[in-house]
Each structure stands twice: as structure tokens, then as C-alpha cells.
Length: 522
Image (cartoon, rainbow, N blue to C red; front, side):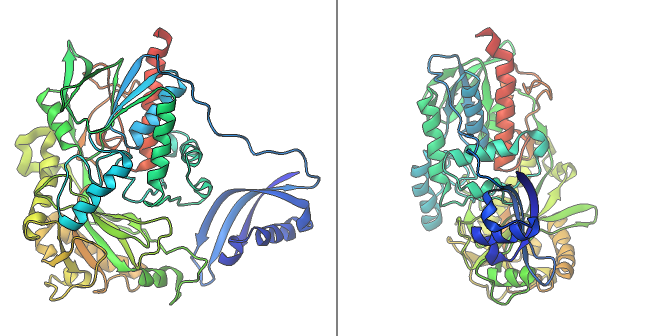
């Protein structure tokens, strides 16, 4: 007999399979020995009351032990080395998962990535943090695996209508991720684990006859009679295929400008901009768990806050418990910050993006740039942060309560941000529509989390790469660009997703549309 049951466990019990079995047996009114298999379905921490619980939903197998094996969900990929080619520009989640699905459908993916492979990237990332030198093709945003690889690997998404989230998670498990991501309410891999997983995905693609080309920045498109024929890279190599999936991520500004020069239709879109806020993790643990010292069986506490201030959302974004703040500039002359954490989430700091919605009317000073006006807005704030930093990757910073009161911080707290921080009046530097609303939201957040508004917290400028300020419009049915045939805009860079899982799903959906169009004709 099989029975699905939701049970309540102490944090310690949740880490012990025998304890789980005993609690379930009591509720099912059977002896623990009669439960011979447990399949976890969903697990979450419930800290709403004084007593903290772990809530577990699982399928329990009871009675006589039958011949049983978990369904083998590892896929068998066909060899597509002689099949027609689909060009994929970008090796982030959208590009990699579109490649896997194309192989399943019998088409050959050729992945063109401007950056380096996932292992080589780490040296450029280290150079950025230690020496403040930005490699415009290999950094936290560009390179194999995309922005998510070296900035955390959070897998939580609300994009369940886009496709099968579990299918994406299972593919990650098949390539080395911890199976717990299949049932954790807020699954997370960690920057320390992701490189090996990304490398395993590349191996699957190569073993199946797909191709990878690193250090190949796309610098031109071959467009003839309204059809995209292929792409040309910086070193003069031409790649042609049945179609091109453009999955370059939200920071590939040169691609937006190239499309603009080619008169390919683009649209300005809203995004969000603000700061990275950093608290001591011990304080966040206390605010969430009400424990001076966090119980060893509990994960580092996370939070999510949102308020409307003067008609706009002010909200936390990409919260990293037990994490660090990292430099995410993609060119010289800009300061950009982001957050990440390793799988253990054991840093003494907790950080989160704290951002405000930027609307199209805010782009008015840059209106002459048309669809790229939001890009200019974004760049202007990043360049201002760079000038304040002393033309380095140091981040302008201010204590939280000082920011709220409009006071310059005479001293700064320690920060996890390796390039360093400099005291600056962020309340004056941020655009008025951003800074004033954040000042209004902080007391509201403090009413929900008493102690959140504190000078023990630091604000670092600028969190600006929340999403793309540009959309590449596509037909909602075919996913093809609305004016250029054979061009399939995809993922965050095209303005259709946000985060690893939603980008992977968008890549899968693009691949399905292409297969539906071409597979019957090849």
C-alpha cells in the first residue's frame, strides 16, 4: 500500500530517516518496520510560531515489500552529430537546456559562448575581486553556465505555467545536483557545486554530437530578405543553421546595440534597481527563528519583504542567507553588485537585493535612445557608482539607518564584499524615484521584522542587473522574432524569464517550437 502523508517534525527529526519513519508510523497506525520505503515530495521550514517545525510531504510504502525501483528518470540522448544544426548564442541556463531538448528532438545544437568554460572563468572572477580588472567576456555574468553559476544557483520559481519545473530539477540531479532540490520548498545548489554540474551538462551535449565554441563573441548577424542565416564571431568565424536561439543573458548590451544597428525591432521594458543590503546572519536568524543562537539543524534563515510606496513596489530580491556580495560589472567604468552563497550557506553575513520598480517614464532623459533608453538609465547609475568608488570596483556604501535618516555614515561595518567599500551618501546618489521609496519602505519592513532597520546593516550600490531593461519581441505562438525569421529570442536577455529555472524552461520551450517547425522537414 502507498499513502501520501503530510507530517510535522522537529528540525532534528527531519534530518533522521528513522525518526521520520517513526512519526509517520504513529500517524498511520502501523509499526515502523512496515514502512519499507519513503519518497519525499515537499519539505519546508515553518517558523511562523514560537515552536519551529519542518513540514514534510512524502509518499510512504507500507506492508509487504514488493519488487520496487524508483522510476529511472535519467534520459538517453540520441547521437545528433550528423543532424541539421541549430545555433545557440549563450551557454547559460536557457542555452544549455534548449540544447538538451534539441538533442532529444533529433537536432544538433551548436553553442557559441563569448566567455570561457566554467573552470577557466573562476580565474577572471578572482582577478575582478582582487585586482579590480574586468574581463568583458569572462566574469560573473558571462561564461559557461551564465550568471547563475557563480552567483548562487537558487532554483525557486513561480513560473510553473511555463512548463515542467520538476523536469528541469531532475535534469540537474541527473548531472550531479543533490536530489534534495527535488523536494525542498526553496531549492538551492550553491556556487561551490554548480561548476561540476555545468561541466557534466556540457559532456552530455558533446557526447551526443553537439558542439561548443568558447571565446567566440558574436559581433554580427547575417540577415538576408528578412531571414537570419547565421552569425559571425569576433575572430571571423561564420556559423549557419536552420535557426538561431539568442540566449545571451540580461547583461549582453553589445548584442542589444548590434540588433538596434541592424534595425531589428526591440522594446524598452521596466526592470528594478536599488542596492544590496547586508545584515549579520545571526541577526536575520533571530528575526526569523527568534533564537539567539540558531539551532544546528536549521538552515541559515532567509526572508522576503515587499511593500508598495507611492505606487511602486519596493522588494527584496535574490536573498542569499549565509552568503557574500560579489562584483558583477561586465565592463570597465561601472560598479555592479550581486549576491551568492555556497551550498552550506555558512557565511556570517546575509545579503539581499533591495530594489524598486523602474518604469518607462523614468527613461525620459534618455528618450533619444529609443528602445535602449532603459539601458542608458541603468548604465548611468552604474557609472556614477564607479566614479564615487575612486574608479575602482569598491562599492559605495552606507549604514541602513543612516540611509533612512539621510546621514553620511562616519564609519562602516565589515562587509563580505571583497573589493572593498567606501562611505558615500547613497540617499543622494540613487535616483530620487528609487532612494526616496526605499527610505519609505524600510520602516514598514521593520514593523514586520522588528530589528531589520538597523545600522548593523549595510547598503552597497548598485544592484542593477535584476532583469533586462530591453525586450526582444517574439510571436507568442511560434517564439520566432516578430520581424526576423529564424531568430528565436530566449531567456532573461530577451526579456522572457528571470532566474535559472524560468530561463531553462524558456530554453526548452524555444527548442520545442523549433523542433515542431523543422523536424518534419529534415
